[in-house]
Image (cartoon, rainbow, N blue to C red):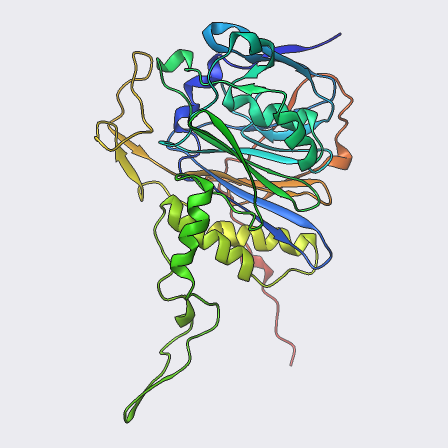
Length: 380
């Protein structure tokens, strides 16, 4: 029996707020393993589960005017983060071939391809792209090829009037290749990404240029400075990073993610690289209250209000979950805002031939290990 799912309707009620401060990057271990890390920031609870999608699942994409779009069947099984009212769609995931696909917010810049009635059967919504690629592709080369056969149409979301979800996409595979997909001014733009980093607006090429403003930064301390009869010395560690941006804007996070992922001591193996990835993700962790937006602010382009989306007095970004994919050993690690305990799924223990969707609940309990009774005498 075939399973067929239309993935457009209720999912759209949440995505306008999705990933407003997301950060993604990649590390390479000495043993050649590639590790992807990403944070998901959101001012409203997505209540995500880790979705398990088997092979041979049939999907129906979304075309404008409520029409059925592209139909496809999953060739590869995958796992990824869903949302409580979009249980069969993922915003970030990895398939059994080590391909990672994720979406990040791109407000003010994303503009998709013009609707074309002659391409309805090849059309999907932008929010459906990671779900499509995870099920159909195993390499960056395959992604590049298949993109020429689909149409990502500019189309509104039913629950948000004429609001169109502004997104761009991070794709990577087990070879370490990273691809950024953006749609602007109705055109598709594809960038090979040698740095392996992505945040949010502006577009990817702007962020690369902006790095030139930080060419003076270094992980090494600045040398002492001799001034006449006075020598100026470092009064503490980290002087090489004076000028590193410390705010949570996309531009600043991009700079930090590039430098941190490039300068982190290279891990010996995948396990150590996963550990390093979570340490880097810690530096981007956003707690509730530090980023606030009033829904009626004139400069707010990410919080539309409609009849079905009540006015929001204050919107607070927060890191709802972080996820790390070991693309070489096919393991996915994750933790949530409520629980710093890391959970993991091993693809070798998942039967992707088993019919039907399955889910793994994310930990939401803040647990502490009490070691009061573990004291032992010191032997001299």
